[in-house]
Length: 482
Ligand code: ADP
Image 1 (cartoon, rainbow, N blue to C red):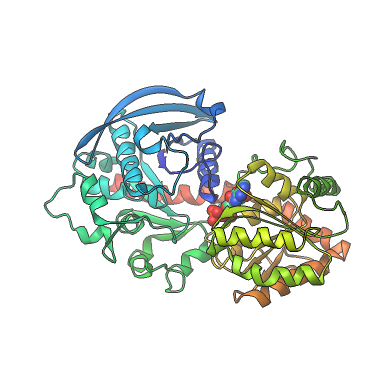
Image 2 (image 1 turned 60 degrees about the vertical axis):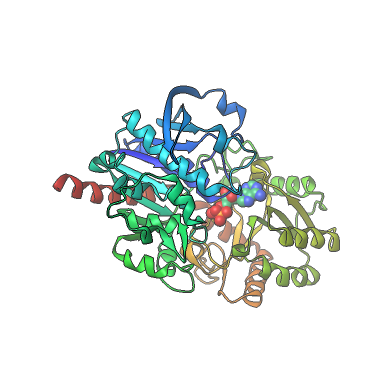
């Protein structure tokens, strides 16, 4: 099958979170299974020179956008049988960051149009066009409603994956009307609007042939008002086409046995080497190097979703009443950054904080930690708990979304389970779950069992890629039957 993907992030080129991990890994698994995969990405300024130096400019395409013709260079980079096409616009992507610009709506509208223009001009054939999150969610609409691109829709079906429903790409309707050339006849503007705004994700939910999200539990949750972020009724209309497929991990990239970013490689048969990595993590972060003190870690975007408010309550108490260390690697909302910086001042021998984004440090911390904290209020899939388990680090998480689907409470009798779960009601249950973890930490037989259960599980993309393939096949079968 010929599959084109379009997304705003992809490991190893540009990453702010789990979306990048998925776009870095799923195409590789599909290519391994014999599919012909092209991945479209913006050519951001932030992409490291070590990659950019291998990009080759293969085409210059004129992108008609907002009544103007804008230049767009198409750069190719091949890796592991995948063709990456980076679309260059100095105007929109020659910035110092990936998101958070006042014209984000216009930037990703442009990118979406540029993807389809490139596909048409360069005759990139696709059976499936798979788009991700709000940034590229309007592509299904464009294929169906913009006469320039309808030809692509004659041979391709569209899939939209929602990696996080909270981010919807909400902009003034003028951002939409300025950008596109849709058939005025019969185009219903209400299909792109939500609460008086242009809502890019909602547009994708309405127009994609299938909508997926990244875990079965989150799929069910987003159909309810509590998790639907206001779009639950739109999602209910697509319920029959809404599928939850759990993310996998790039098990090559996240492999403690070969990871060059960590102090000492190990696998489940040499798990004792984790101690070397723990010492390294402690010394890197300026904490006392103590093997027997449990080291808890959090690596995260610092956003309300991630349950930092729960840690604001839970951590001071846990740190006061236990021999415990805590390391935070993250960045985001200032009030949360301030909380952690202050905490490190209050507990200088127990808490260390690194505000920022650092992939190598993250790997060293996954390898060095004993316990990973993930008190998310909601979690579409969550990759951090999977990475933790792969590195023999035990997750303590809230029972929600993908965390519910992947973290299993340890059972003393059967010695099954890979972590500890708190019912989703705030500080007390989460503190209790951490206490259970700390209790088992003292019982070395059980602690070894929990770590091994986590490390030995299969987190690869194999099964999930198979589910995507099944979905693609179902869609294209209908196409050839028409
Ligand atoms: P989300 O996509 O909501 O941010 P996930 O758990 O799905 O959460 O994925 C987060 C990914 O981003 C993981 O690979 C995690 O290790 C990484 N990450 C988050 N914050 C940082 C950071 N400050 N430095 C390095 N990696 C980070």
